[in-house]
Structures are given as C-alpha cells and as structure tokens.
Image (cartoon, rainbow, N blue to C red; front, side):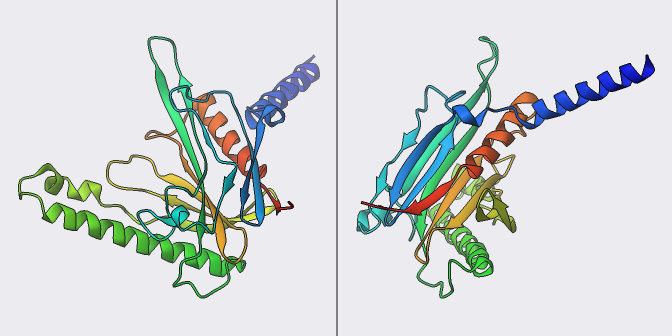
Length: 247
C-alpha cells in the first residue's frame, strides 16, 4: 500500500509541475507579421487577458527609408517605429477591478552613428546597447534638470526632481531564446517605479535591431498571474522568426 501511495503522490507531483511549467497554450496564439525593410519579423501572442480599454497596436510594415520613421525624442525612437504594443490584465472579481497588468512594446531601432562595430558581433552589440543606454539616460536626465531649473524654486517639478531622474540599466547579458541571441537587461526607470522593466534586443542586420520592452507592473507578479506572465514572455520570445522579404 505504501508503494502505491508513493507512486500516486509522485505522479501527482509530476502533473502539478507540468501544469506549473505550462500555464499557457501557445498553439492557440495568433501570429503577426511585419515587413521591416528587407526582413519579415513575426511572432505569436495570446489574445486572452487583453485589456479591452487598450486594444493592441499591430503594424504590418515600416518604411525604414522614410525620415519620418525616425523623427522623435532622440536618434532612434520615432513615432513610426513601433511594431506592436500590447497590454494584458489580471482582473479580479467585479468589485476588485484590475489587480495587475503587463505591457509589451516592440519597436525597430537603427544603429547609432557613433557605433563603429558590427551589430552582428554579439559582444560588440551588447557593448553598444550598454553605451546607448548610458548615453540615453544621461541625456534624458540633463533635459529634466534643465526643465526643472526654469521653474520656480518651490515648484513641484524641482521638489520631485530626484524622483523624476532615471537610473541606468543593469544586468546586461546575452541569452539564447528560441533560435536567436538576445541582449537582455533590466531598466529601473525613475524613482516612481517600484519594479524594473525588462528589455530584450536582437540584431536584424548591420543597420537595424529589434527592441522588446516588457513592463510587468509596479508590484511583482505572484501566483497564477505570475506564472502566466513568465510563460507568456517566454512563449512570445521563442516564437520570434525573421526571414528575408520576398516580393
């Protein structure tokens, strides 16, 4: 009897472990394709839990030769370089509303003019991303300081400047997910954020790379929602495919 009970207990543990490791069924996900210059970038995403008030943004083509694509707050982030944008929710009982959320933003970026290495060289690409993050953080903070200095000494903007200043990213590393190499790092943002975002970047060619920004929520995801978030991020990244564009 004891052996039978032990065998049953072991089987139940295996089932629970399997369920915990696979809280999503990626076979039911939708695949989206976007033409990015000479490449077709595609990925799968779940339609369940999408926040109705924030419908997904899905772009099917981005003209990389259009100067308007790159006009924006800095040399690479423009209003037209977004590939996709999603927000999923963890909704409680009707009286609780939304308990948690996850936001994913995908975009294409071009190599900085100051970078002289190869985007297809893993170590050089990682070093470029670190330097780009450092420069971007310093530039953003300098603009915030200059803006605050133009306000009265007792203004809210001056008194809260220490919270508005961004911190540089950290934990830069190369990781293989699916059939691609990504640079992954954490972005703490500014003092208003309680949990860092996560960014994954992968090179398309010598001129362009894709950035996927994941903002789980201000509080750490827990329980079934936390498992769902982790499995969704993993499944989405594993589903990424890049192939040459063929007219």
